[in-house]
Image (cartoon, rainbow, N blue to C red; front, side):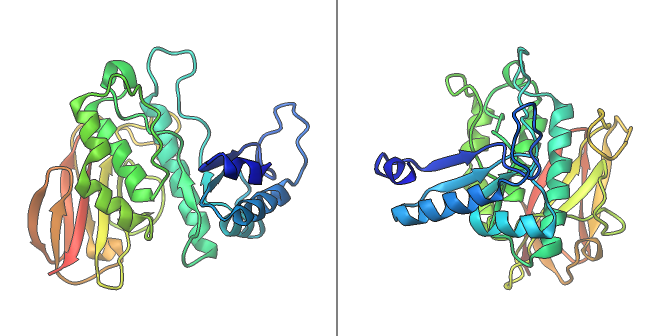
Length: 292
């Protein structure tokens, strides 16, 4: 089957309801379907073509199985579907908060076992191409979603209405500077670093760092997720603008860095001790750091 599909130019294979992990939902799933992931990996390799194997969905993250996923698949779902089923808009911010926290849990679990992950996170489809009346989230929230998908090195698969993309959405999807960041985070996915402590807990005001690379380059995300709407994991309640600050100590780096705001294409100068931004609920900044 896979060889036949290879002839037909298939580029992406999604293997759903993989166990252990996926809920049974009355389908009488086998308790351990990890062998199917290994089999598909071998079959794809035999075709001689490049095909991405994506596996789904609530997959076991213990070391035994994470090693199987990491060795045999290209990406794995970190969360359930994001879309608003039977609703007039695509997604709700409460669901996005859940997705961010599920990625946080996923990257912590993965890097507990591996210094470098071979597998990428699948955070579900990108629903950022349309305005709020279609997408269900504001422009600031759309930018934050795109920032987090890029920072995570996640699959960038569109789930928007491609017939009604707006100017803001098009920029999010085609911005060359953001794409360059995505190339970097594909090698160095971002990890959480709590402002003030450097911890990795879920927080309303959060910092993330991707890297640093051997040359010192790093990517930093600062975010204000707004009040927890029930699934964010952080129980924050602030509804106003907040300063989000991350010191170099929080981020695990040191030295002087030239800081650049990616989305605003603005140089923020040389910083010796950390970065900060005043952010409203749902807002974030995407920063690149290079040694000064």
